[in-house]
Image (cartoon, rainbow, N blue to C red):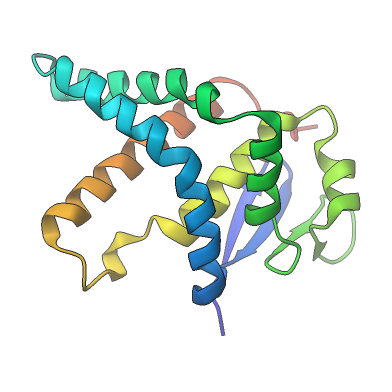
Length: 173
């Protein structure tokens, strides 16, 4: 019924199913409580640097978001976001050299991500992207709002790609 997206991280393949719409509303509501204050602060800072070139503005906004996130993102909040985004009902993983894909439950998370916390955060970003950043399907949202949402998404995706391509993933054995 729901689409599954394959996501390769190192030598492992994750199968991420979209969260059903009514449950996704709850997840989005909780995630936005963390992200919107950080994004809002970054946008204010971006407006102050309006003389910058567009590519510099995107980098500046990303930097400002990363700078303001720690004010809104403590350990308890990160754990709560993980619990909302990494749900074994919607994510399975096929570990290289092992049999079939298995649900990504707490035991599997501990096995795969011990000492690799940033890889887990990267997976959380991917789950968020799959569930909440496909604006091509939006029909009731005004074009201007859709454009702003797409711009914010490209900033996050650009920052994530840069971070993940600079260093080999710790899943690469």
